[in-house]
Amino acid sequence: MSLNQPLIAEYKHEMANTRKILALVPMDKYSWKPHEKSMSLGDLASHLADMPTWVHFTINFPELDFAKNYTPPAKCSSGAELLSKMDKNFEDAIKVLENTTDAQMFENWSLRNGDQVFFTLPKIAVLRSFVFSHNIHHRAQLGVYLRMLDIPLPGIYGPSADDKGM
Image (cartoon, rainbow, N blue to C red):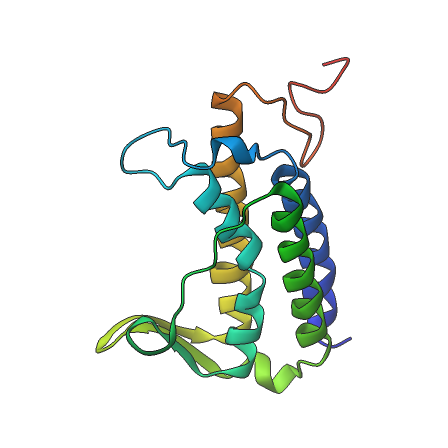
């Protein structure tokens, strides 16, 4: 079995959970923040919808340099647009992963801002930490935002406190 196969299965599982959370985002509260230093609800949701594009940037390039070639994700204006963006980006990410060789997985990739290098890791480690785990981190953060707005949450790794019978 090639390395991409278990990664694809894991990513599909995690992104299905991310989609459940994104579907709950009330876009009329786009600018809401739990704290002045926090991202807004809408910016956080847009960030999650954009994250699958990171698979392409990880596999097909040797680095991401914020000083040279980074454009922040466009803001979504509706829940439908948010989900459509995530679905399209995720579909493209799966295609990239399906065509990724084991050799590519072990090539190094760097995240930098000009001369400042944040990290250099094999692409497989970048996928697992910077892409997959980073998504899980922000999905959980979004769940806290939604909880603070009194929006019932679905179960992710089992039932949530909002699931009936719990």
